[in-house]
Length: 639
Image (cartoon, rainbow, N blue to C red; front, side):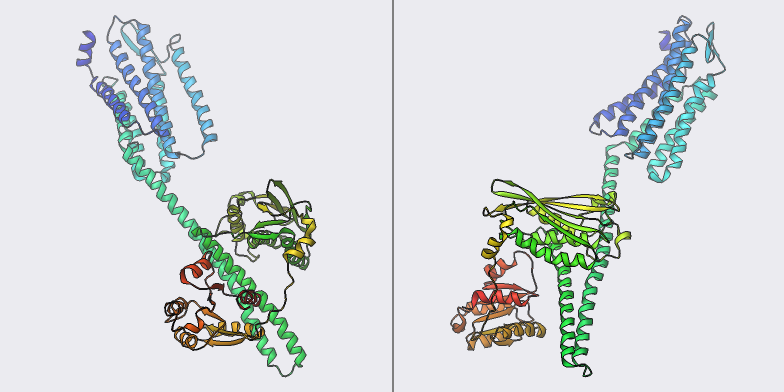
């Protein structure tokens, strides 16, 4: 009864309210128990210590007013109260720094803080224990509590020290906090400090520390740890991350477009400039005719090289477009690996020699040679790797090594390309195969290239069931190793190349289209001229049309052996022309069985099937086409 009377008559209402608030806090956080953040756990620990601290504060003050309670018990209660309030302030600060730093790597800082805090906590409690034997904090003179020289330090200044550290952290790390977070954290610390200050002034007659701690926990839970706010923070983080990724992608694409502008303009400048040089040479009457012809042929070869370079750039862009749209495919067919490697060696040994490099090729001759795969794409993969090796090597060697493992009906070629070039920085390795990026721009800005080659290599190998590895030492060189599985078609080894060569490669013969009439339909005069010159070189009879309606009139009245029909033309496209011919066979009876072949600059994967199956063309040829492409096409339809 005396305890109840003391509670009702003393200044314990704030302590009772504090205990009620903290219990309510645990009820609310229990309802929102699906939140399991690191800071929420630390806040729960702080609240638990605060609850015991409130109970100890209230118990120690009540016990001090009851003479019957032994002095040692009172000392224990006062010591427990001081300990728990000290620990509560420490946990408030830990929570504050954990909230500010969030998921940053603070392992070193955290270990240092834990070590120092541990020493302070041990020292604090050693003094509390020592007070039982040498009362320097407080002691009892009969029923009265007497304050020792360390009471203010241990009871108020030590907890206040921690809280001030928290305030300093809030102000020094203010940029990392939102306005709401800054004000909420600052309010917590100031409220607890104010409660301790007022309780000290009132000489512990009104217990405000417990109440101020409970208010601080209420603010934390309401403003910083509620589910709604945590969802808002998570959403903001996701938006910021998306914005950063979008900005990074835009920067990469801007850099890519800048590179593309350079890579396209460079060969285009060569094409236009060399063409002008050819014209000037051919019209220069001061030069003998043999010299004019020789120089013109030289310029023509250079124009061809620049045009092929431009075509490689465009093909890389198209391949990346197919990769991003998921439409990059591989087309398998029989080929001999030694044939492919010999083609590559003839090209790259010359390139390496021109740069003063030694080119070395070693092939395991016991591996199967006659396999099934996409020879064009395999060539593209190895070409990209050797091209890079030569480009990024100033002196030394570039080597191609081919080994492998046979597993049943499949051979896994292990093809490595090694150079003694500039190497790759360790931090650049994770981004080596990224699209729209070139690593080490500061070191390699002078080297031509789109930066798309390695991204294409990785994606092509993925489609073929293979992969790529990189080993590099910056300043010393790099090794790219591709693992390429291919189906074995025969027991012929790579070393038996000559037999496979005789079977796989028929000697090309000059094709003659003499006696055949071919119609070219294209609205572009230059395209018509190129196709017409190719056909006339084959001795074919050639007629041309510049539009769809003109082509229909010509097809209606004359028999053609082949019609080369441009797909994209103004007013009436090639597919419309074909549709009219197929829908009115009686009107175009002379050409009812004539092969009509689509000419188009659209070269995406899968379009050949679309032109044949959907539009109804006999076949398909993509621009730009070369003379041998035209020969291969007409050989199939002119018998």
